[in-house]
Image 1 (cartoon, rainbow, N blue to C red):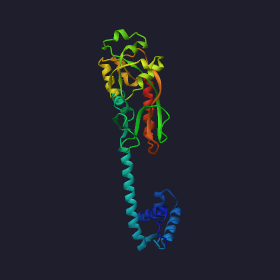
Image 2: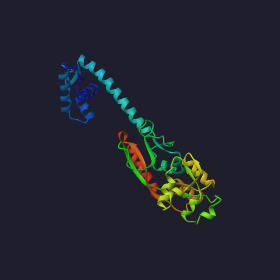
Image 3: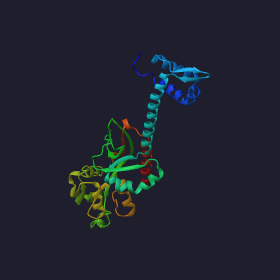
Length: 297
């Protein structure tokens, strides 16, 4: 006698037949033929070496062995059904947790959050802010929205959304605004520039693309994060540099202006999620983000 578990299909056929007390009804529930169920029952009896049913009139009656297996298999399959239902419901109810920088969250996402929730009500997006410490490989995070340069990590599914464009911005409240608003980009070589330690390459990259000597740049007040840098710019404390999407609302409202436009970098705004945890909702979110970014152009 084998001590291995019988084939699962045979157990499913038996459990359904014993629960419904009918081979025909079991076949209907399992979406197979009457003959297929009968064959599985025979396989199970041969595997166990015992009879599970005896004929009684035109129907079937469980043997003592059949009663024992009915009780055990019924309990096991009911438990499996319950757990599978819980898992399915849990996944359906779980929010999609997206990590992004605090500056991206505050300056781009929050102004659009109402529209996203209306367009993708089943997504149930939950946003988690961080600065350089967010990793979708860790539990608790489904995806990451980030400015980064390719090549992408091999273990990530990446949706590239838009090329990064950066440029200097100033507030009309800045004391040097009248002097700078119509000046050439080279005028910034004489300005103490606001900068951030989280993106030290931003000013040199822009200078290089503007045919300016990056070594001639002068730096003024520094900030730990881009969000604080842009708040300082809005307050009129100096000239800052930022990705275009993060200042879009400020430009529309006139809180900031970009006299020298924006330059494309080698980085991309992209949605990252681990390949091992592919989530169909990510594709929907990526398309929505891409559409939003395109409309802003």
